[in-house]
Image (cartoon, rainbow, N blue to C red; front, side, top):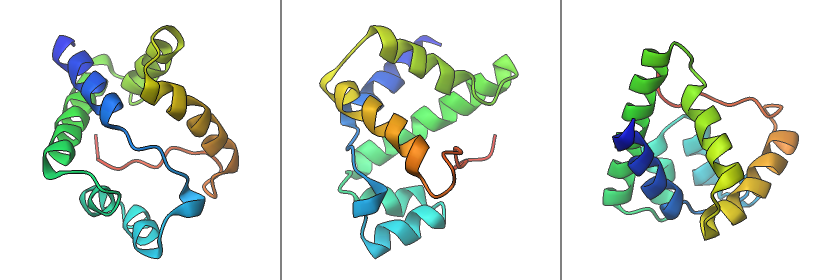
Length: 115
């Protein structure tokens, strides 16, 4: 759990907040194809940042399985953001709440890595 918390912190601090309404055609296609690496490259993430995110997702999937809840880590991050604010979370929290209301998928979370 401690390793996951630190990985979540690093990923949160590196987050580039954007709106799907402003994505390029290439970004939209990569997102639709669930190609996280390409999508991240197109958004300007470094290979190190992409690797860190992949590590975070692996840890998240392991923890979700261990806890028997596919949304366990998402819920923990949501609760942490209620207490701890960073410049990134201050920008991203309103964005994600708006995203859930306006997204064409109806705000459903689209899985990007099998559990």
